[in-house]
Image (cartoon, rainbow, N blue to C red):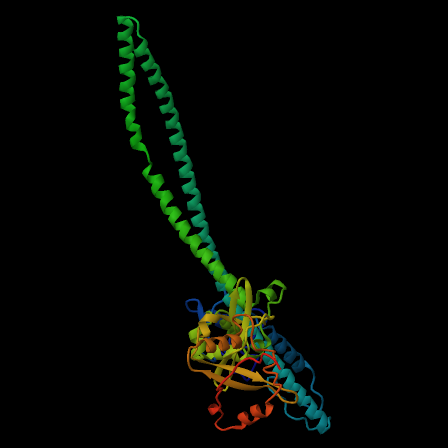
Amino acid sequence: MDDNVEECPVCLTTFDDTLRRPRNLPCGHTVCSPCIDGLKQQGAITCPTCRASHAVPEAGQFPISYITEGLIRRLRRLASLPAEPGKQAAPPVTRPAPKATTGFSRKAQSLLQEQEVKVLAAIRSCQEEQSQLAEYLTTLGGWSSRQQRLQDELQTLVDQSKSAQEAVHREESRVEGRQEEVRQKEQQLHAALQSLRTAATRQEAYEVIEDTDLLVEKDSQTEGCLGVFPNVHAVTTVTRVAEASRAALQAATAAAAATQAALKAAGTAAAASGDSSLPAAWAEASSIADRLQALLAPPLTAEDLHSLTQRARGLVEAGLVFAVHDVKGQTRHARISLEDGSLYLHSLQAQVLPNFIATLQMGKVVPAAPPCEVFLDLAWPGSAARRVVVSLPQDTPRGRQFMLLCSGQRGACYANTRLFNVVRGLEVVQEAAQHRPVTEVTVVQCGVVLSR
């Protein structure tokens, strides 16, 4: 089916510029527009050639294969040219052309065929890139739709919050109105009380008593107004909306913090400077889908590192795993390497980090105290650095100090220092180093030279 680029592999009909335009599927195969429409099922399509399943893009159509159309037009132009005597029409350029028998030297024929192979490889590369870009575009369309749905849901929550606030304002107006009524009534009752106390005649007393009875009776009738407070609907609405808003805000805050941490681990400085590219090793060794999956992968954990999962091993071998140590606002990082199947944590340094690193807290990967093993890389003039691994079998103050001086967790460390400055007894050190097994060499006494 793939031998004739001018025909649809489904209906075997020649492509044209109107109804049966060629369209690229993400897998790289080409099908005419009517056949693609007929293959759509529930938002997906299965390639008739390789049986790969692809989601239908948001626009409803897969991209037109302009390369195929251009190739067909070129073939048709070549076919319309009159054939020269003794020459045949050129075959389709989907594969290297056979060697010509006349007109060119063998060297020229070889150069032409080599160049043709390069062009065909470049065409296949373009088609592969188009396929990956189309798949990535479909993914972006899905993200856009999801984000729009989230935005609509957030807008609904905002609208509910506004309605709850309006309900609170209405309740405030009712309460303030009732407060004014009660204040005026209290003033009337104070005036009535004063009249009762200052009545001078019996007639005046009867009139004051009658007026007071009416006022008190009216007040007792209006005491039922307290029963309408609070407004059950307003209180219930405000409480529920407040709980929903608080939960959404907490989730958004946590998500924002996680996003900031991810950006920091992925290279915030590069993003701020406009560098949105991936490390060269990633870009060369994977497709868009693979790199996208790597970026969306969950954070690396200490368990992943110690068990050396495939992803952890790849990151360590790429030099992208660091332990981070924060003390009083000062942040330092320690690179983690893999050599001979063992993981090595190098000393903490204040260093410029590469982009897209994975970080782990120092306390998650380094034991708090011996027993453990530490290493020293020793070098001298004329010799490359060579590693010495020292076992600290017991948790002792001396062992802890030696471990801290190797990791640099307290600031100072052995890195970039001279190990010893032997002024006497160098031959003893050399002889001890030659003893086998060297583990039998013991420090039987030590001290400080006070004077010479």
